[in-house]
Amino acid sequence: MTTNISNIVYNNIDEWTNIRENMYENIFNALIHCIDDKIEYNQMGTLGITEKQRLYLMEIFEEELYKISSNRKWAEDTTFNLIYGIQGFIQGFIKNNKWRILFNSLDAIELANILFENIKWQLDDDCHIPCLLEDVPKYRCSECNRISSFTYNNKCEDC
Ligand SMILES: [Zn+2]
Image (cartoon, rainbow, N blue to C red; front, side):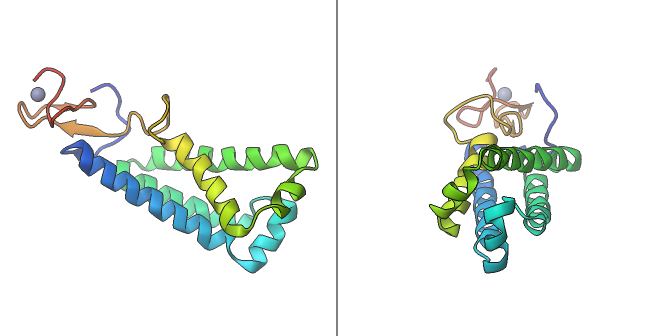
């Protein structure tokens, strides 16, 4: 056991993957919900992420990250970083007067999809490391009962 982000022990990779996919689905739905909203969406053309959206997403992300880790501090810090990352991405366009062009070329669903892929890439898209979730899952070995961050055929690296 190398790190101590999560207080949850998973039985196998499938269990972890299902829980992670469920979290991604909830994050995706939250993005759609707050971006595909006429009033907020119109303001996004000048502001990027609105204050109302930021607060709403913070609440959802924190809850979702807490569900997979049982670690409130980590969930809060990671949420801050995820939203900060998205805001920084948008600010780069705003500062160069390119945001309006990009914004006008997308509809709400497309914009939500882009932000979702940004978040998923940061968390873990299964295509690169390091990523924010790489040290989260811990597994119980079906052979020796030891808890490890590695699992293969439900067994730890020693079994
Ligand atoms: Zn073992």
